[in-house]
Image (cartoon, rainbow, N blue to C red; front, side):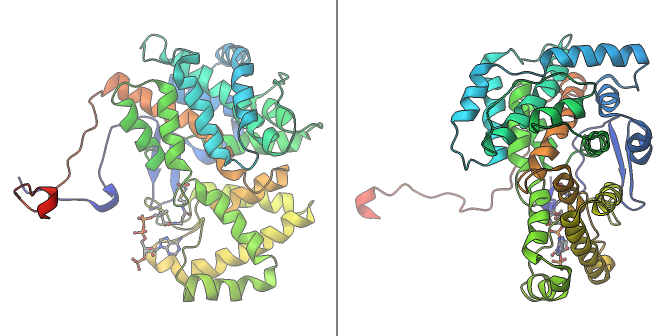
Length: 379
Ligand code: CMC
């Protein structure tokens, strides 16, 4: 057997899926056959959760049943809230999320694989993510932890826990669409990490911890925060040219929110996030400043890199949208994680229940073949 390594596992297929289909050349993204633009235009996050977990869009009755089920699980135990509140004030938000799901994995609730109950457990974990992320935000903002007051939708309930003031309908709508946009994306590093972990038949909550650990890196979900911080660093649209020349062209730093392993054209999610940031920019001067910086930077970078197939990805504009919703600059990655929990769970269930085999690749040994042991005083 001639062993070959595909660096970064490029073009290695790990599973079959009926969840998400990406055409990276045409810039198409579909969840179970539905185009992302249609889902964002007409759907809600709860419909997408149902679609991903149960396989089809829900009827009105199925949707109501799902919403009722989720409402029962929005809140988390006071023990978990207390653990989160005791973490250092400057703790990393994704690190706090890892702690939260580790607590769930430690047996607070039983998330072991049980095929007849997995979907119910997945819904429970998706619902609990709401209070976990919202309370991490509250703790980092110096606000007391609080339970969810149940509102009409997941997005509205979430924003309501985060902020101590009424949230305009348009904001709820944008939050709902952002949740749809980040819900799944086939098998990026985080989903692959979750799959590797779940293939050992560990519990569902531990698979999420694995997903989170991979997500927070700046080459993956951490790019959402890093992209927004780039715009803060640039500060003003007049500085874009000099910043781009110095950082990207001269120092060869990677432009955050640009490039993708699969897309060789603009990520369709990026176009939607750009549209939302443009809308916010009409009403909010700060957002407008960041939007002007980002769109100028996108033009410069596209001119420079398009011949290499490097374009804006979903993380480029999302931070501006979250900032427009009122979130602090460290929140884009936790908000990415909030809805990606759905994709991670849908993929690990698909794998464990249909294609289970432990994921155990090989490494090609290239070290010294055999050596005699030398006692320590003779080395
Ligand atoms: N800025 C500048 N050059 C880039 C960038 C970038 N953002 N992305 C790729 N390149 C160049 C890279 O230097 C290399 O050039 P050369 O062939 O001359 O050495 C070439 O493009 C191929 O890069 P690669 O690292 O082999 O590509 P990859 O498929 O392994 O990496 C990526 C994909 C997303 C990690 C990479 O594009 C990147 O680092 N982007 C910036 C971070 C980012 O935005 N990540 C979010 C990804 S999408 C959403 C998500 O997962 O969260």
